Amino acid sequence: MNWFYFSSPSTFYGLAGRLAPWFFVAAALLAAWGLYLGLLVAPTDAQQGEVYRVIFIHVPTAWMSMFLYFVMACYCGLSLVFNTRLSAMMARAIAPTGALMTFLALWTGAFWGRPTWGTYWVWDARLTSELVLLFLYFGYMALANAFEDPRRGDRAAALLALIGVVNLPIIYFSVQWWNTLHQGSSVSFKGTSMHVTMLTGMLVMSASAWMYAIGATLVRVRSVILERERRTAWVRSLGAA
Amino acid sequence: MKPRTKRAVAIVGGLAALGVAAALVLNAFQSNLVFFFTPTQVAKKEVPLDRNFRVGGLVEGGTVVRHKDALNVSFKITDGAESVPVTYTGILPDLFKEGKGVVAEGRVGTDGVFKASQVLAKHDENYMPPEAAEALKQAGHPMAKENFAGQGGGNPR
Image 1 (spheres, rainbow over the protein chains, first blue to last red):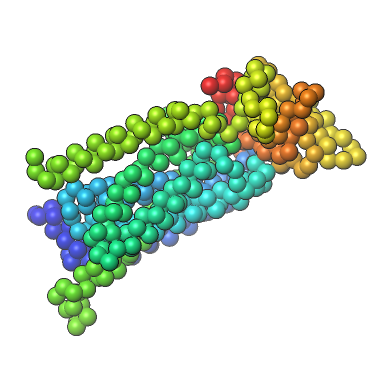
Image 2 (image 1 turned 60 degrees about the horizontal axis):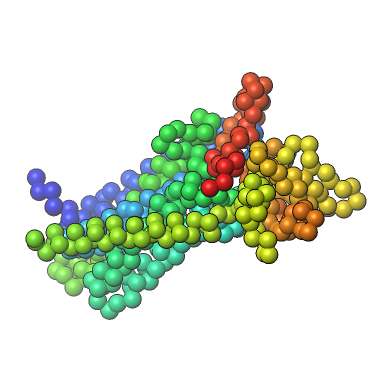
């Protein structure tokens, strides 16, 4: 078996098309289960009452915003080191989903902060570094598309993405390193301070966000491949068939 | 070295250098990155007295006084070691409660009272149903921890 068979855009195009619907189905099923657990089964919170249920969207999207950036940066590193065509296209395909997740985390956080903290927004270390992450995604997308030659755009944006990796530990550890208005992590490598049903709902929603992100990336990378390879014989033959 | 090995070394080396630089910068700005000061820092006068700043801690039990004719309220913020008297005029957030986390923005007046222009509630990272919270309380395990929300309120850094 040739391990690099699917690293060619033309073969990956077909694989992505076949896999994507399954990830969307998994995302929908997990979201239905997760929302059922979160909105109907999970108990009221002793401190915050019902408003804490924002957590079932907020935390999964915040996790995905950081994780997707990490994956995107890994693809950027691969593309710079090995000059593989597909890695740069994958990085481009991940960016909009990552930006969407970051935006959702900030947006839901604002509407959670208003009733609990008493404000939509504060410039504390956690919120500010997450906003910087959103700008990093925007910057990546802008830079990648700022060049006539897409390969130059790939390289410039890949460098930006790699530099931005510094922000990830800052976001994650901001609530430990500094005094922030944002509370500490409820789930860490050491354990959790959440009731078990609440935690299950949140993890199921995270799995759903994960499946959605993979599906969306696969669909998007197909259009990136088509656009990039539009002059090749295999893309032309798609149109003829 | 092959070109691609060179590129890999350059990227890993660059990221390491960047990480060290970021760590040094963040360390240098450590004191500017805190969102609030603790009452101990206020007592030691380690706070900017000429401009607004924030004080964070727990609302001390039994110190909340609401004036019935207006939105005036006074209370004390404590970190276990020291406490700061605060006055505020306005609507308090829903989660404002004695023994719970709070962050107030304002400045210290000549009388030593902190005049807050904004009061925010800071909740902790524990999520549990009311029955579980009640059971914990009866077992002598109050939910309001000494170092609130996982961030050492008692020991200033």
